[in-house]
Amino acid sequence: MKVTVTIDRRPEIADPEGTTVKKALHELGFTDTVSVRMDRVIHLEIDSDDPVEVKARVEEMCKQLLANPVLEDFEVHVDA
Image 1 (cartoon, one colour):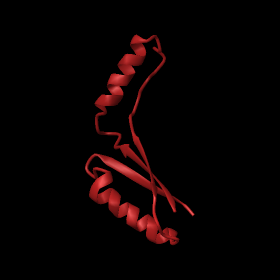
Image 2: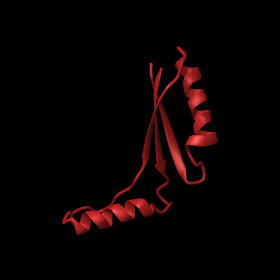
Image 3: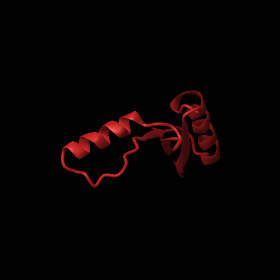
Image 4: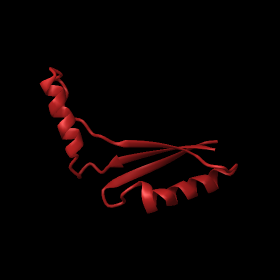
């Protein structure tokens, strides 16, 4: 079963990578860029036919390893 995990830095947390990319875009002439946030998307394939079980398992993966719960929020999308 294919799973997509979207991990976003919480809005109140600074994003130094996004700030650096915004500055570089401005230097390249893309001065209309107002803000940049650098988030992550992870694609997994899980060997199971139960979408509820897969979602719970991947959420546990996020809590233990894939996401930093202090700085980031995550969403799990299972393609059933």
